[in-house]
Structure formats: C-alpha cells, structure tokens
Image (cartoon, rainbow, N blue to C red):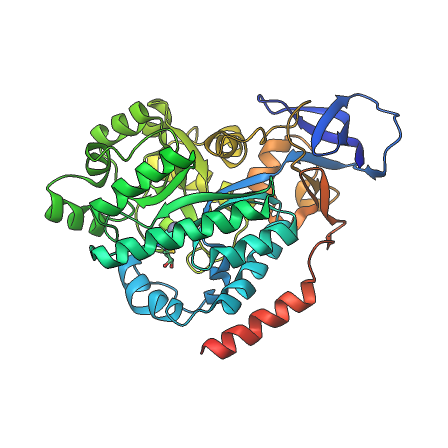
Length: 424
Ligand SMILES: CSC[C@H]1O[C@@H](n2cnc3c(O)ncnc32)[C@H](O)[C@@H]1O
Ligand SMILES: [Zn+2]
C-alpha cells in the first residue's frame, strides 16, 4: 500500500526544518520527500494549508486510566494512589481494563500520538487493543511486590506471561517492556531479577523514579541513599532504562543517569497537577541525558494530548527558571518526537526517507494557527490535539479527516460509561 501526501508544510529531518513538499509512503516507510512527487499511490491526501509532522511519542502513560478521569482530582500522589486509585484498580477485571485501553487508544489516535510506552495491569488485553487500533505500543505489566518474596515470584511470572502473549501476536508494532512500578513498591530482589531478565530477553525497562519528595524521604529512610543511587548500586540502570518523572534529582543523580545512558520521561501536567515538583530539565539536557515527554495516565493529567503536554512543558520551565529562553519550542518538540524514538530504539520521530511512516497531519486552516509564521511554534504554543486531522502509523491510515478508521468510536465511548457504572 502507498500513501502520497501532497502540498503540505513538512517538518523535515532531525533539524525539523519546515519545507513545502510532498511525502511518499510505501509499505511502512517514508520513501521520498520532494518538492513535487507525481508517482501514483493507493491513497492521495491533499495537505494544502496543513502541517505534516512526525507523530508524537508518549513516553509514559497508563492508557486504561481514562476510566478514572476526574474521579480523584486535586490530591498529592501518595494520597491519590493509596486512597483513591489503588482501591478502584483492585476492582478492575480484564474486560474493564480493555474498555479503558480502547478509550485511551481512541484518544491517542485522535490527538496525534502514534507510539506510546505504557504500564498497567492486564497488559495482554491492552496488547490486543494496540494490535487492533493500529497504534505502536510498548507495553509493560506494572510489577509491585511490596517486599513480599511470594509476590515477587508472582509478579515476575505475570510479566513473563505477558511477554509471551505479546510475542505470540508477532506484530512489529506491539512490544513488551519490563515495568517494575517504583523503588518504593518493588524489592531489590525484584529489581535485580528484572535487570537479569531484560538482559536475557533484550527488552527495555520502565519505572517511576524520584517523583515526589515523599518518595525521596521513604527511600532515604529505608536504604540511606537516593532512589537513583540505589538503582545504580544494584546494577539496575542502563541505556535500556526509561525512568518516568525524575523530578527530585540532585547533581549526583543526574551524573549517574547520564553515565548510564538512562532516558527520563518528563510528565509536566501530572507533576503540576499532583504538585510533585519541577523536573530539572535544563540540568538534565546540559548533562546529555535523553529526555522524552509523556502524559502519565489520564487520571492525573487529565488527558492524553501530547500537544497540550508540549505547551505545558515549555511554559513550566520558563516560569520556573524565570527565563523565557528555557524549553524553547524546538527543544520541546524534539522531546515529544525524536527523543522518545531514541529511547525506544525506534527509527521514527522524524520525517525523512527510510524512517517509519508514523506521521500526523495537522489542520492549520484555522484562525488560531494563522498566519503560518512559525510551524513548530504554532504546534507547541497554539495547537491542541483537536487540530490533528489525520494519523498514520506504520504506513497505515488510522484516522482520516478526523474519522477513526480502525476503531468504533461510538461503541468505545459507550463501553467506557458502562464500565465505570459497573465499577462504582
Ligand atoms: C502497577 S501498574 C502502574 C501503576 O502506576 C500507578 N500510577 C499512575 N500514575 C502514577 C504516578 O504518577 N506515580 C506512580 N504511580 C502511578 C497506576 O495507578 C498503577 O497502579
Ligand atoms: Zn506513571
């Protein structure tokens, strides 16, 4: 199958230079970007007045959590988790989680996310949704053992079962990732086993680290060191590790992350909403740490819109540093695209010949996006996910002119309502 996108403002290459060009997709790859392409294609899309952008890579989320959107707002993390979210999650079944995953997938397609890194329960069900939706998903079963050796064994077993399930799907778009939840919910034994298994199976690892001051207090009290020092000392860190949050990092932690080639997934909306703190973006980037962007779950955000997230990231770091030059639009755009791809070892996040055809078309024929003085600026500061018109993943059109082609939108919205009624 081939797709030809004509007449768009194309954000081209690693430098994100904007050029008026056509883009030809064959199979799952971008094969040509040129001023004018007149080759025949199965589908031709006219992108006049529109922007052709790399799809967004959500580097940290819990896709089914949209079910809990708005049910527990305005709380700090530990209270939110322990008293509101975990009791609800204890009632989740595979069926309910799948309904949440459909809702998350639909929201992501409609707001221009093409790839996401997920951590949740019933990830075999989430994997089925990803396969059906056409999205690219990196899926981790979230392991929590709370220091109980019996639970450690059970959690590892479930992770391996999920891995086997995902491998049997045999999809280039659906990947398994190891996901120990956090240093405060996982034993050292579990973390060491995860490291060993990730090496054995060649899988990535994702984990929440240094999100709140309360976590730093807990880990320092338990182990006498920071979460990052702890993870380093047990041999957990490596360039296959993506830590979510990394809000409370001192200079030593940052050096350790840089030395180990760890990626940090920044979640500004969640960090602001739960009042967790401000991630030291400038210091991480200056140290050479790869920083991507995530939304976290929709119960702490409260959406999965990566365009919103870019704006929040840019504004947060400007006001925090009292310096408007910090987190400029291109830096934030790179975090939401190329940096995420690098972390996932994916040839994506860029529109260029040979790259995966994960592309979104954003309709700039709207007053808040005119005149087209600066495409990247408009995407970061003026646009929202609702402006995304077409979403293409792996060369396949998942949404065309805002109509989602792979999922039944009405049914998903209906099922989400029914599921939360059953859960109440
Ligand atoms: C064990 S599956 C994932 C687990 O993580 C919970 N969660 C959602 N958001 C956060 C966050 O910001 N910090 C820590 N944990 C979070 C989610 O509710 C699941 O229980
Ligand atoms: Zn999270």
